[in-house]
Length: 400
Image (cartoon, rainbow, N blue to C red):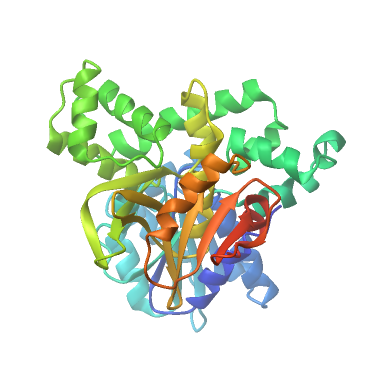
């Protein structure tokens, strides 16, 4: 089992604090496993398992606990006086009125509460004291660690480059690794996951008049990652596809996809004028497996760009798309007071491709570092101060 150390550390920062820890992220990214792993962390610190209460509201055995009073009574009966109790509730939003239950438990002073859910709006709505912990599917480093532990020797013995090609193709959902790179089984799993997101994480929470329109919107956004888009552009695209859609409806769909962790909105930043722009943000997918499943001929450039975005987000950079004149910088990434300008291109051996990708860098008048990330083995710094970074190195260690 992979440690998911980053998320365990985040949870540990808020242990015993008077705040509800909310673990959220796209369905299938491993939220439940993180809750289980953190319970082991607590027990390793000497917390008795009798002080840990773990409830899975998505299981049939917990059906009676979907009624708030029953949920509260069940937990209260297990609380021990005079010590801190640790309460974990998976898919807490399935219990209508869970917010009041949690508020009353928190007020008792001896309950440290952890909950999870795939829809951020549903799981946080009505909560007043909470700390959000956003979970992404496996990083490439975690993926490699898991593959090295594979029971199938031919999988475990593959090179880093071979693993990367599968990572780029099948995505980074933890369960796909249990399918041992079987294309048919992975695609079946991902299609089931995609449909479940539609039904359980969006349509069961928001009134959707036509599921097929939402489906078309999701498919379009997942197969056009990194491309500037707006609610108007999405509405016009859906209408051209035969689904007459208004701009407000398209904006709702975008927000629904964001709140269940399926896509991430990245705003634009004018580098010359040093200001954030409101128009034409880009959207990136949480998992390239879902994107590739829906794409007829996946291409490496958008895949690699999306993977770099996810790693930047995982490393907690603040990310924008840079505008410099009429050109675009793929990512303006900031962290701890430092800013980097980043271009991503699968291969830059061709001089024309290299010059085209470096041209926007040369229009920037400040002195923040400029980095070109590619799959080429070239590393080091050019005469003009542009750093060349190998994508596999960056995806493994997160260092620019």
